[in-house]
Amino acid sequence: MAEGRGSTLVHLLVIVFCLVAFGFAVAAERRRSVGTIHKTPGTNETYCVYSSDVATGYGVGAFLFLLSGESLLMGVTKCMCFGRPLTPGGNRAWSIIYFLSSWATFLVAESCLIAGAKKNAYHTKYRGIIYAQNFSCESLRKGIFITGAIFIVVTMVLNVYYYMYFTKATTTPLSQKTNRVSSTVGMTGYA
Image 1: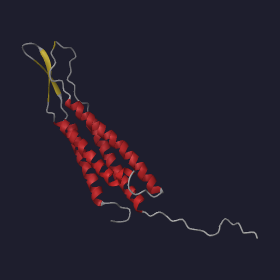
Image 2 (image 1 turned 135 degrees about the horizontal axis):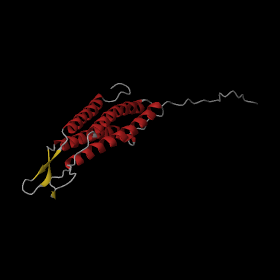
Image 3 (image 1 turned 90 degrees about the vertical axis):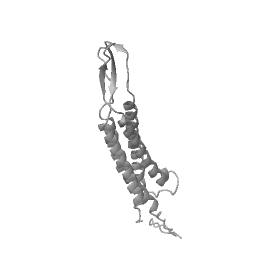
Image 4 (image 1 turned 120 degrees about the vertical axis):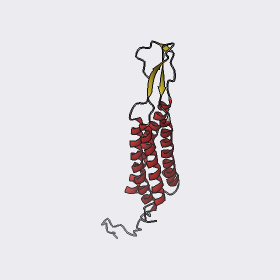
């Protein structure tokens, strides 16, 4: 392992988990369920018939893969709270910035994915309304899963940079202070 580079396997696994989550999120957006209004011939009641519910599974799959990638990275780096301390300097500052940013984008992506999966799973199967005016079948708005997919990619990039700067901050040795016998401020000793 090169100095400050980190494990290539960790980089690769985080990227693969995030890309699979991205693929599931895009597939969930493309396979959102859509409802159509049907009428019962004899009673004239209206009800909704929905297409397949596979988008919910894709959304949950994207949620789980992104959670796995984030859990792997936080397990390896011990959430920056445990393990070796980070050496002061620019690498520590960047790793903290990328850590906080990746958590923020991770939470937004996860909330978009789980909210989209929940909303997609909620369907009005049957409403016993006779002669309903302005009756519509509820469905998921376009773009919920795509928003999650965009935040998945941003989370992936931030996670890669976080891990890179984290390994640099943990592998660089602390600079040793030089012990000076006398002051170098320019003050001379008076006898």
